Each structure stands twice: as structure tokens, then as C-alpha cells.
Length: 413
Image 1: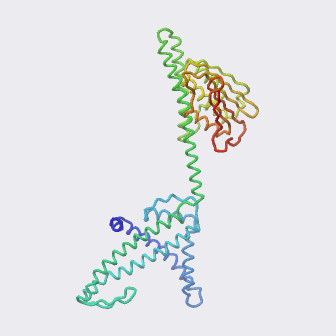
Image 2: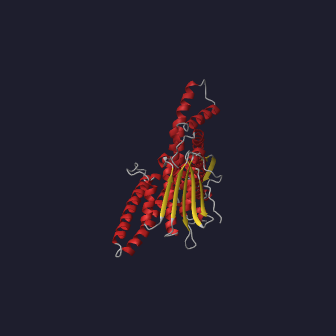
Image 3: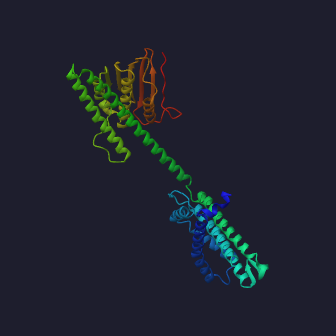
């Protein structure tokens, strides 16, 4: 029952009439001049089929200009209560078919409305004494009790007309979704844009996780050291506090760059850290109380900037994991720049039966490596140490694995 009464409670019927009226008005605006021109140039009376074909061609031609689809989409959204996206491509033939169907459906609804309005005048004819009225076909209305059926017919026509208008709106919504909605090229473009947006969001998440996570880890350790030696060794406490200050400044720079990328602002003055900053990274980690050694072989300044930045973040995350999961253990960091590959290695003993684990940080490193077409290996080696090894190509290549993920293998003892 609720579905049956739905056309009477919503705006579908009034909006459907408005949409149909626009179709008839537009078709008349185009069709009347075409008929007039044909009447002038055609020798004798214009045949009906010729007139109909010319009118259809003129109406379909409305959909050929680029702006026509935009107008049709806005009209459908406004009067059919749709949510079609703003078009970016013409789709001329689909739009021409839409205008043609819109004209036919609108004319049919207007014809039904005209017939219903004539039929609704039957009670007035009955009360006036009756006569014969043409409603598509001649209808005889008699006076007195013989014409008492006219009010019921009027009510039925009104109900039928409301259902026709609601049905028109439903039909045109279905057609609009097919003919005016996004085409294949637009859907592909939207999917690519969404993929770029997700990739940008993931990249921002990786940057924040690596930079802020590293700073919080080292700052927590340094603050603990400062608290323990504040009274017994003030100089060490001051060094730890200075290291916290420097790490916080670096984290603020990283946060500024990440938020600037999110807001699409111009590049900040401070450049993103690269392999040239690896030694300084290890110094800050050592200031947190870690026994850390770093060895760089080759010329890190020759590494492409994109690879160098990602390698720095990978090393940063590897050191952070070592500090978090193996506090106090000796950490070895090595980078080797070859002719075609950049090798990166972070190793630390496993303490407390744990390791660096396959957490969010390692997944982020694997994503960085995949995007650069490199390989990543992580796990315990034969000596029981946790080892992270990364190889990054120095020339653009595709990702190594077929499933779209970086190569990752766990060592066995």
C-alpha cells in the first residue's frame, strides 16, 4: 500500500510534468522552424514521414554540441532528482538519443495530460444538461442519473495522470543513468584519479609513520635517559635533551612537508632528507643510548633523489624498529652504492625473544621498495640476528614481483 501511495506523497509527479514540459517546449522550439522551412522549400504539401524524419533529426542534433550533455545532466539532476556527475566528455550520440527519447516521452505525457484534462470536464458537462464530448473518441454525457458516472471517471483520470507522471520520471531516470551517466572513459579517469588519491594518502601515511614514529621512539628513549641521569650526570642529561630538541625540529620539518603535500602547497624551503643525512640519523639514534654503527660505501650523492629519499626513510624505519623492539642492542647500518643497485642493510641482535616483526613499519618499507622496483628481505639470519636487506635499482624499472608486492623473504636459521 505504501508503494501504491508513493506517487501522491513525493515530488515525482510534479517534477515529471515539469521535465516533460521542457522537452515539449524544446522540441517545439526546434521543430516549428524546421517545419516552416520545409513548407517553403518543398514542392507541394510536405509528406508526413518527411516532416517527422526532419523533426527527429533536428531534435537529435540538439545533443551534438558539447554543452548539450551538461544541460541535460543538470536538468535531470534538478527535475528527476538524480545525482549524475558533471560530464567531462561530450558522448554526442548518447546525448542525441537522450534528447530524442526525452522529446517522445515528454510529448506522450503531455498528450495524456491533455486527454485527462478534457475528461475532467465531464462533470461540468453533466451538470449543464449533458451533450456529446470528444475525448479521443466521442463520449455521450446524459443529464440526470444516467450521467452520474462522470465524477468517478474524473477521479480515475486524475489518479491515472499522477501515476503516468511518476512513471515518466522513473523511466527517464533509468534512461538518464544509461545515456547521460559517465561513459567508460570517464569511469576509467575517475578510477585513475581515485587510485592517485589513495596512493597520495598512503604515501602521506608512510611519511608520517616513518618520520614521527622515529622521532617519538628516539625522544622517548632520550627522555628516559635524561630522567635517569639528571642528578648524577647533568652533562649527559643536557645532551639527551638537546638530542630531543633536534629530533623534534626534524620531525616538525617532516610534518610540514607532509601537510604541504596534502594541501598541494609549494615545496617547503627545507629539503627532504636523503642518504647524505644517514650519518646524522645514526648520530641522533646513538644519542638515545643505542650502540649504532654506520658504514657507507660508494658515492651517496650520485644516487637519484627519489631513490635516495626512499632509502633514507627505509633506513630510518629499520633503526626505529631496532630501537623499539631491541632496546640497548647494537645496531649495524650499511649502505653500498653500486653501478646499478643501492644496497641497504640494518642488523641488530634479537632481545627478549622478539624482533622487528612484520608490523605496519615493515609493510610501509615493502611498499616503498615495490614502487621503486626493488627487493626486500627481512627476518632472522643463521646467527639469530634480525636483518633487513634492501636492494634498490638506480635506474627506473618495473616492480619485481608479479603480484605487485615487493619481494620479501624470511631467513631461516
